[in-house]
Image (cartoon, rainbow, N blue to C red; front, side):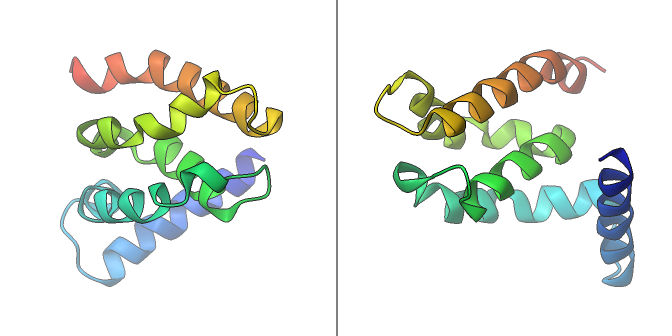
Length: 112
């Protein structure tokens, strides 16, 4: 899996370079993350373990680095699913792991 992640990160960096975006991959995430999050959050109540929106959400929050911090408030409806026992257990588990990751990483983003 690390090879896939590294390949994806390289592809994002190449895309940012190809469109001449200042700031490379971080610049691309900063420019696009709010719009992408707003779009996928519209379907949050219907997420299942195989939902592409859940996969995009997790990938963006894990890969977006510091650029996602200003948009975390927008993500709260997704994390509220963790407390809903009627929701898919796999989705809830995925979100718990993602939240744990963010709680570890966000201090690194906000305290340079």
